[in-house]
Length: 74
Image (cartoon, rainbow, N blue to C red):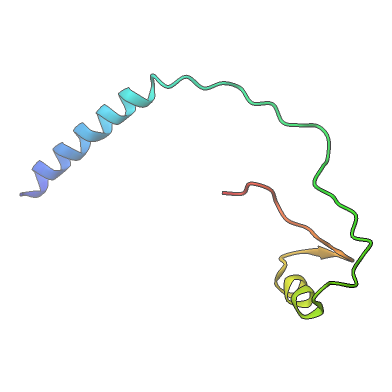
């Protein structure tokens, strides 16, 4: 195949795709205003200290006993 033919096929594929995707109906999603996802960690006796240290060493950001991370960043 020559380059021009490949370019034309790519343009055709993109045109079909954009036409198909324009028909997709999106619904609005509302975000929760409340903060959640916290749990009480009162019993740390059964905690693997090495695992805990590795988690906090690898965490991008930490504050005392909390790992600060973004939710659904993909």
